[in-house]
Length: 317
Image 1 (cartoon, rainbow, N blue to C red):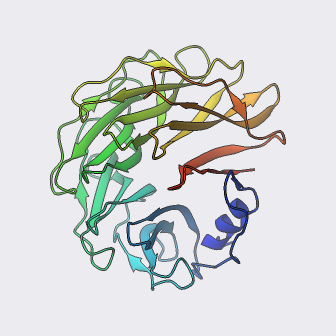
Image 2: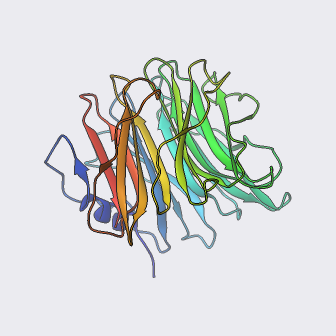
């Protein structure tokens, strides 16, 4: 049975909780493919173009596709196929900069290396044409779950997890030239357990903020660290959750006042719910927990802030 991209949009639009904004457009279907359309990622640029990437299995192998809208989602371009391989790309992440650059990363299995690496494409003309695919991780082991952020200077920042140290840890690199070249790899965690599913955001002052979940405490908890010097040095770990059940799948965003917002899903007694907290001082101190759901079965939250500092959250239930 095929899955179209509209299935995901319909599901999420039914359970969105906007702190500002109450009116929603009609549903717009973006794919009519014979295979499965899955794992979408969305970004908006400074000209209000909307950019979407997703995975599609219609052509006997899974590949990455792209569409854009220049009129607030009323109509969409035709799909652009981004990959032509049998390496099973997964978990794409897309971000836009302020100079017509669109940046996409994903993980993909490399047959010759028998493991997974992170790959990258960029567009310098707002998604009209795209660069060749570039491999941007080379460390041993599996590199998975990439997350992108772009700062006000159009530096591109990326985090991911890699299991080469013997268990999963979090790694970081960045590009200062809109993705042309990338720095070497910086390791962010040395934990005894598995550090997984990182999410990255940057604030207007250039602070880089990263969250992930880690099972070193005996069950999975949410951790945070940040850099104030473009990733040269990093703070120590800050633990954000102390729940009796597992806390997983964190997502992070910043607003125009440089407040940091984090959501994740957590097992509370017998039900998974969405939790939230924030920091107004760059991660030095954090608010108490705010519980956003009471219905159970809530997973994989995503959070963003608008220009008026409204905070918007979606999740799966």
